Amino acid sequence: MNRTPLAHTRFLSAQDVAAIVTRMGAATTLKRMADYIHEDFLRWQDFDKCARVASHSAGGVIELMPISDAATYAFKYVNGHPKNTLVGLPTVMAFGVLADVATGVPQCLSELTLTTALRTAAMSAVAARALARPDSKTLALIGNGAQSEFQALAFHYLLGIEEIRLFDTDPAATEKLVRNLAHTALRLICCTSVAQAVRGADIVTTVTADKTNATILTPDMIEPGMHINGVGGDCPGKTELHPDVLRGAGVFVEYEPQTRIEGDLQQMPQDFAVTELWRVLNKTATGRTHESQVTLFDSVGFALEDYSALRFMRDAAHELGMGEWVSLIPELANPKDLFSLIRPVAAPTLSGTRYATAATSHADKRELALAA
Image (cartoon, rainbow, N blue to C red; front, side, top):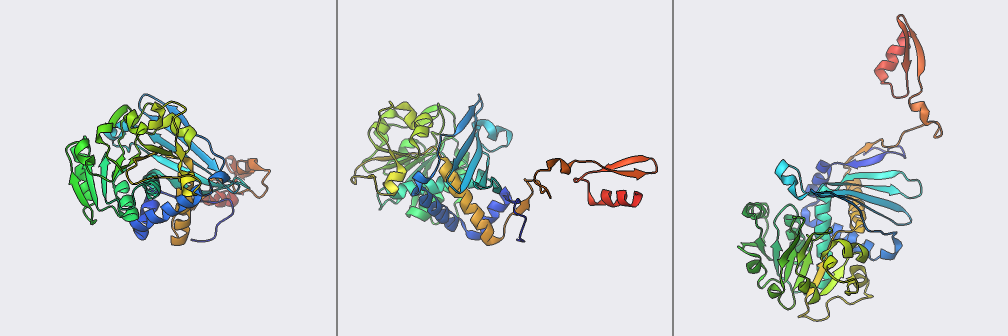
C-alpha cells in the first residue's frame, strides 16, 4: 500500500476483514486477537471508560461504545435486532473507528460485524483460560446462531476443547453449525434439549438472541467445577440464567457498572459481589478457588475489547497490505479555509458564466479552462 497523506484513513470493508482472516487462518486470527485483548486488559487503568450509550426500541437496540487512552480513541456503533433475520439482515451489525488522540484524525474505519464475532469469541477464551479448569475438554454450546461457530473455534484452538454438545430451538441453526465446522477435528453432538447438552460439560456457553428475560440454565443443570460463559444476556430485559445460578457461582464481569445494567447480573441486588476480570488477569484477585467451584463469566461485551479488535485489524491490514485509503477529512492548502472546497471560480463562456469549485472534476476544469 502506497504512502498516503496524513489525514487519510485506512478503510476495511467486510470483504477486507474476511480476506485478512482467510489469509491468516482462523486459529491465528483468534489467538492474536485474544493476545491483544489480554494485553489491553492488563492496562485497564490506563483507559477512560464508560458504559455504552444505548437507544432502545421495540425491535432492538442501537448502541455507541467509546473508550480511549492517552494515545488512541475508539468507538463502535452496533445494533441488536433479533428479528432482522426475517428480513434478510444480520441480528448484529457494527462498524468502528480508531482515532489519534493528539490530532483527532481517524486512523482506521472498519466493519465490526464479522470482527465483533471474532472478538467476542476471543474474549470468551481469554476469560475461560483464567477461570475454567485447565483440563476442560467438553463444551456445551446453547444457541447455534451467527456467533456460535466463532465461539466453538475459539474454545477449540485456544483451550483445546475436543467435543461440543449443541442445542438450539431452531434445528436448522444447529445443522448450519455442523456443516460449517465439518472441516475441523471437533466432535459435534446434536442434542434435543439444554439439559442433555450441558450434562457432563466442562464449559457451558449460552449465546441466544431473543430480547427477553429467558431462563436457559437452571440450578439443577449445573455440575461442580463447570465454567459458564454467559454471552447472550447483554442488554436490559435480556437474560439467560436463573438467578440461583449466579448465587451458586463465583461471578466475573468485564466492567461492573455496565454489566449491572445489561448482563444476567441485572437480576441481582446491588450488593451482590462480583469481580472484574482484569483483576484476575493481572493477579490482584483470585479466579477459580478450587476444582469443584462453579465459575461464571457474565459477558456483555465492553468497548475495550473493540479497541483491541480494531488495533489488531489495523495492524493485520498493515502487515498484509489490505484495505484502502479514504478521505474522510478534507485536504486543504489552508486549514483555516474550509470554504475553499466550495468557493465558486467564475469562467466566461459563450452562453454566460460557468463556475468551478475545488470539488469540480478534472474533466470539467479542463473544459472550463478551454472555454476561458
